Image (cartoon, rainbow, N blue to C red; front, top):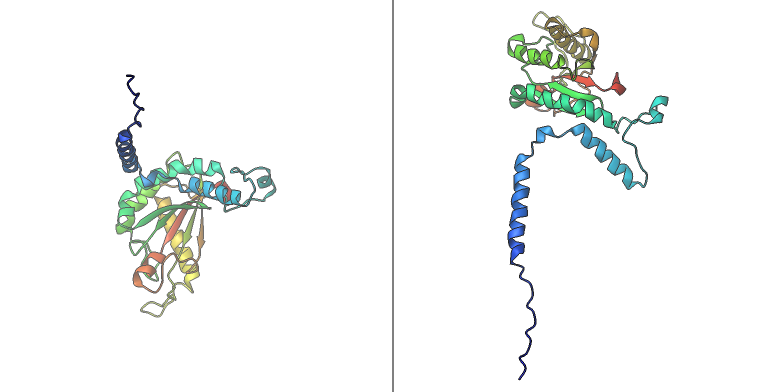
Length: 243
């Protein structure tokens, strides 16, 4: 009597559990290696702009193209070269100013103008004053001088922008009004930062200054803390389109 043939059984899927665990462990490993300070905000904005424009059905170049030669530049779409040039500078700024960023004295960001280093809080300027507290901020100014001498930024142009809170300028104890308004106060803050940096060795011919009074707050002026952080100076490493 012939023996019946057994049908082959289904292959085991037990290996899938082990494989899935391995993939999960690898993902966790690479997440642990990721350093957010290494991400290039300028390059990310280039990619985001390209994606948004592709949704509209049109292709968009990430370089300036021929229209830029005619003066038709789009500020919201940085050139890819900008990310390449400012990326190393931002990484170095994050490293150099780590002591200041930990104490919330400085922030390092980037936007369509370029790389922005913001000097924040009462460490630098008290309410209604354009005088730098040099004892408190000397080390920060020395780090700024060292950063401006770095080969990645030494040939760039810089702009120092002064800002105030929304409190009107008040007269001193003798009734004298040093600044007619916040406009003059904000410009004086920018000029004083440049004077100190110049004394420390930077080339002031690479700089320009501007004052914006209280027209560009970054924090809520309804709190003393917000006002303190709005009494700031922004130092911008300009890209070629904003000279």
